[in-house]
Length: 607
Image (tube, rainbow, N blue to C red; front, side):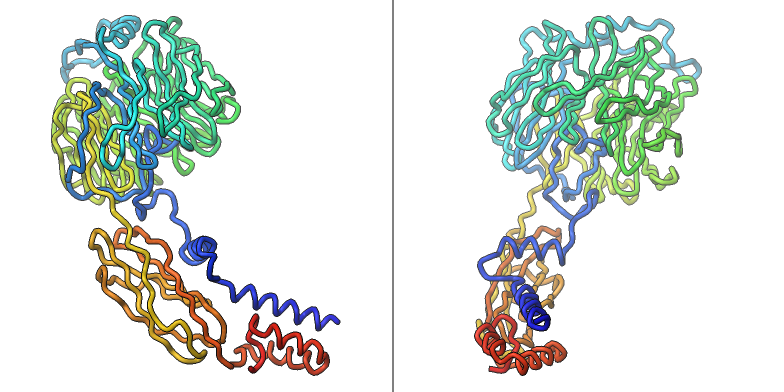
């Protein structure tokens, strides 16, 4: 009896082995093949062109690093004017749609005289913070902004939602989460909009003025806030329905000033600034789920000279911040242990107001050298803090260092700007050495930073122009498979495969023969030209030949499938299993008859 059960189990196992792939179950097979044979793409790699840019710096950690492909030339795909000014709004790109907030209109504030190198840079008379807030919130009477949605592929307008001064949104699961400052009430509201139509789903009044981009992580919304009247700062955490989860109140005289939190591995990091000194600040770490204080580290941050401040970046157990020592004229890029807060390394990079980018094993930062008046970009090893290279930015200007770099496809994109001067240039640099690959001059200056998604770079200028560079890399067509649909086991047969790439790129073929053997990325082969491969099936049965094509940029097609049948008489290769069934058949004649009728399941007996 036990042997009978063993026989049935073995037959069942043979059935399971024979059904990969099975005709009529293409979706199942596609997932199975991709997961088992092809593996998955790790975050931070540059092998896909489908990575989106759903929030301020691409992800909750503010890394500014995308796994998307990125353009090698300044080919303008499209340009669109939204009809409103855009100040520091960052393009957000998700599911072939681009979202952008007009952001803040900053009234003219006269900058202080350029400091002399022989004198301290600390101004003798500090302006009132209330005066700064008054000037910051001063708006043109006719000015109203909003959130705009465009087709990311063509630039065609889709919808807009009128607001006064919205911050950068986050787009998650078909919803747009964005805050708007009510200029007449001096309080903000958090909105949830439908990403497809722009219709309002809900609105949540806030008790403070939200002065950060919207960051969403693990179904929670994180917002840096400022009480306009008491100047006290808070970090707010809400769920995706706008319900309060927790609030962390900063110590007296500390506030958050246009700097965004970063969230990684269950912890949230943000910078609080001393409202009276203008220079002292603190890096905080809280439990992201409860708001419990975990640790803090003192910093310098000369936020008074710019409307935007550097935000922290967290990734792979480390936190990176720009630290500016106003007394020594030196600025540093610092790295802290994300769990304990202990400093791991520090590198002198000059004066930096930008948020660094962290990609793979490197951190990229821009800074201004007070002595040479040059702005530089640095690539630093994330583990040791050692300099890999530094290169001058192609343009120079006073305090021209606040452009936050972004990285994708081994390229760096940065638009230098600063309090004294905003450029209208976008630069693409080689991540290997900082060399210039291409540049583009916008129609007007910009305070925005680039976004990278689905093979394109997006950027906005002051006058409401949005620019898209590069073109979408289309995947090859589903491979056509041609060859004999049936034959005899043990005999080789030729099959041809053909896929055409819309961009004319060479293609590679991944072929699974249905019997456990495969051809792994055969190529490169010219687009549209057939390749011929031979294969032999040792056992009789029905098999699915499955083939997928990818181009030289790793954009992959769907699976093509051809069913073939080998109705032949051949004993199973595993002689041990055959002997078991022969003995069972001798002892149990009835069982032999049963196996005769179900023999196609395992191709066990001679026919």
